[in-house]
Image 1 (cartoon, rainbow, N blue to C red):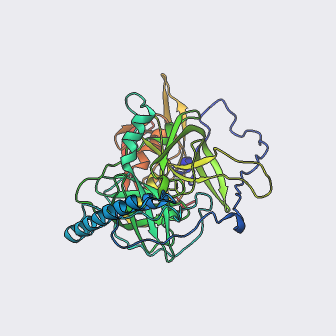
Image 2: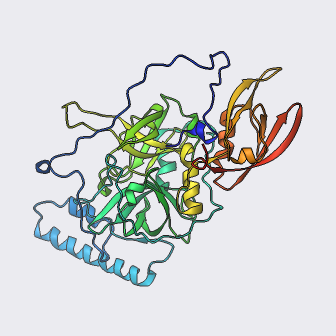
Image 3: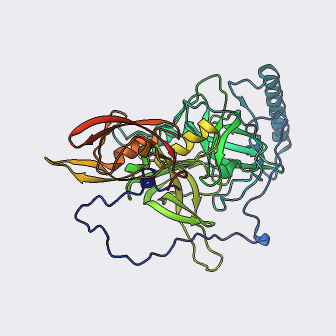
Length: 450
């Protein structure tokens, strides 16, 4: 993941009492992630299943999984009669209702053979041919600070679960099952890229069982994010997204998703935030993630990590599991993409269909003490070729506001920038030599300059 301080440019220490060049600290060991994958005789970790395409009652897969080995002849005839009536009703509804945008009921994959998307092995390029559409550039993911009092676990579930969907990505053989979060009431849905990787088509199921065919708006494998779009006639229950920058170690955390596939869909687990800004190396790529003790398993991929206010603060992405070199067990090590840090990725996927890099002002800043008390943000360096350089910003300038919002610490500037994408302009209020003025800075990709 992109270092958030680097979206402005690498930030200098905010404590002025520290020396400018501290002694080099001993290098910490890199965090290497490795997992145990069951051998063939023990069963595959990920299997395929057959997707029944004929109209069937929604709960047939549940009934099949719980069939008793022996039934009386009377119970058998009663069951067959009920099943026949239900199938007839579903077929009639399908004929009359068609595939309208109001959603439909369709059979979920057989619970005995579902293929939950791996939350362990998340990288790997596969051809994804899900029908793609252009997103609305005006749609932006907004992260809000918590308001009011914390909720009980029951209240959190009641608030968030309607916004959690089962994501079924139809593959050339079988399908992949994951979780998603409804971002907007008109049908934008966030999930992991590895959930839909290799998909030919995709559909989602609400907690009510109503399903929608979805199109692909955009995805990025390195950031492991994807945005899907349903086309509902009625508003969908969108989730509330929180400011993950405010998360602290020890905060309560919840996860809702489909561990091990559809049979356990809608499962809620809880724990705490175990670490923030955790750098985890996966297949040579370093991701900066939230670490949680809330239980995550295959099928939880793409689902929400939630704070005690019922706000989505992360997208569950991976977990650590037992290594193949020891007999030690590994528990409670789950990781999520911090939603504030990846909001610009989501926004870029919606606006452009792909991720172009982090939008950057192109300045290095620090928080300093202000005469008379308080703090202010001062520019330390301006990157050549950046929007800030073109706007005439200089080292030593003080940034008083961004887009009309007061700036007193560097995180204020980060917050303002996260609501934008590459190509947008940010209005900065600058104080230089006692003179105050506004400048328009065009955001450019952090990949375009050093």
